[in-house]
Image (cartoon, rainbow, N blue to C red; front, side, top):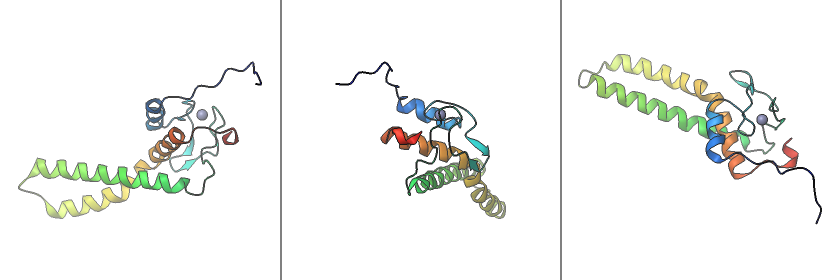
Length: 133
Ligand SMILES: [Zn+2]
């Protein structure tokens, strides 16, 4: 059995990975700076050199799904709270305009969070491999 002087690298717990992801930090090392701008993720983590797009063809689809779910939940929650607050005098014309604008804005506002959250979820179920660095 081969021996090594290097201690095994401990993977963060699932909750810690998700918390880091919601703070737009690397789910593996919690480094900042994963994005060059709001919509552009770097190829590798500046802290641990982890490939942020893990190279699987369906990686983007998972982030897209998380974005859709998060945007819809935010919209439904905000819409429901608004209706409860103003019921029964709902300003339906204003609701139509705000709903369209919110549905356009929510996916853009959620985008970086969904990329990091999906990366964290992926790392929880498929931990870092040597080829990921
Ligand atoms: Zn990292």
